[in-house]
Amino acid sequence: MFRRAAARWIARYGVAEIIGVCTAVASAWLVDMLGAGTVATAYAGAFGENVGYYGFIATREMVASYHATRLTGDRYRASHVGIVARDLTIEFGPAEALDSLILRPLMMGLGTRWIGGGLGIVAGKLAADLMFYLPVIATYEARRTRRAEPPR
Image (spheres, rainbow, N blue to C red):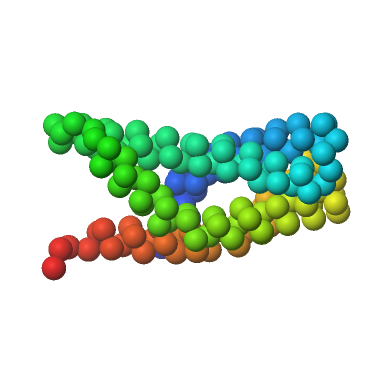
């Protein structure tokens, strides 16, 4: 059962993570090359990761929503976009607020200070991911289970 769940989580978050790592390292590298310092580099890495990660997640969810709506013969409307936005906010919102403002920049800053450069950003990212995914996966699984239940 855990293997099936883990495969589902990897399918849901894996590609977004890879893109997030690339955009985190690229953003942090750019800011570091500009000589902005450790704190700015850490925040740039966190911001860059968010752009890549959520850009991919949101695009994938919107495309899936569009195709599901078109299969029913309905037109894709702003309300469909709102549903996707609501679902993503429920899944990621609380964890992301703590993660982006405090946890991820702190971990990336510590990684950069202790390890240095791109490897430090990646190490900090992985440490922050452990804390981030606990509530995200719990919310995703609860929502997935709730949708699978027959109506009462």
